[in-house]
Length: 272
Image 1 (cartoon, rainbow, N blue to C red):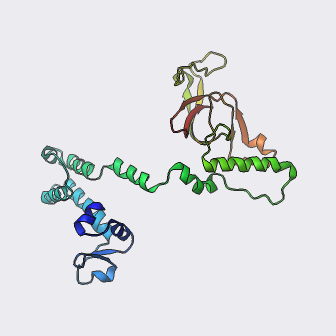
Image 2 (image 1 turned 90 degrees about the vertical axis):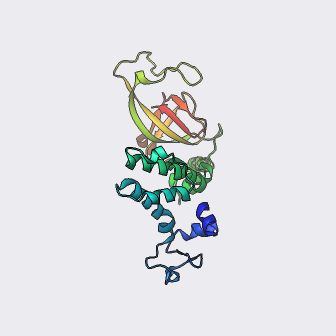
Image 3 (image 1 turned 180 degrees about the vertical axis):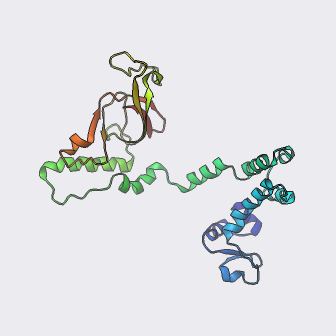
C-alpha cells in the first residue's frame, strides 16, 4: 500500500481499511467513500480491492497470456511499479510463460509476499498458544471431585499449563503432537546421531532387508524430548480420569529413539 499511498497522497492505514468491504476511491475528491459517493464520477465504480489489487493483476495476466495483448499496458505497469525487467525476457520466444514470470516475480514475489504477511499478521507460537490451548487441550470441568483423583486432576492441570506457556524446561512434562507417520526401511535410517554417536535401531543388532519402522514427525508443546526416552502414545479417547482408559487408549513406546531435533526446540523426528 506504500506505493498507492504516496501516489494518491493518502494514508497507508486508511487505504488498508478501505480495501475490505464496499469502499470506493473518489478520484476527484481524492477520498475513500461509499458507493453513493461515486455518483457522477464513474459509470462502473469498482471497490478499492478490485481497483488497486485485482485489476493490475488481471491486466498483467491478460497482456502476457493473450497473443494480441497490449504490450504498452505491460510497459506501463513495469514503469509504474519501477520494476527492473531485462528486455530480453520481455522479447522471449515463449512470451506467455517467461514474460508473466519475469514481471510477477519482480513485482510480487510469491514467497516473500506470503511469508512477510505471515510474519506480520500471525502471532509467534508462544503468543498464539494462549489462543489455541482451548482446542489443543480443552479444559475439563469435574463436578464430583473424587479425593482419590485429586492428584490426577492436579497433574493434568499442570500439564495443560505447561503447554499453554510453551514450557521447554527439563522439569516440564514432555508433551508432543505427532502430525505425520510413515513406514521406512530400517536400512535407510542414519547410523549416527548429529553429534556422532552410534545409533542402535535394533536391540538384536541385526537388520533384515524387509525390516521396517514407523518414522514420526512431531511438534513438541512442552518439555524436552531426549534420546532413548520412553513416551506414551495417547489416542483422542484417552481420559486420565478413567482408569480403563490407560489400558485401552495409551500405549508405551520404550524403544523410541530421537533421530533429529531442530534448533527451535519445537519439532522432532523419532522412531516408534
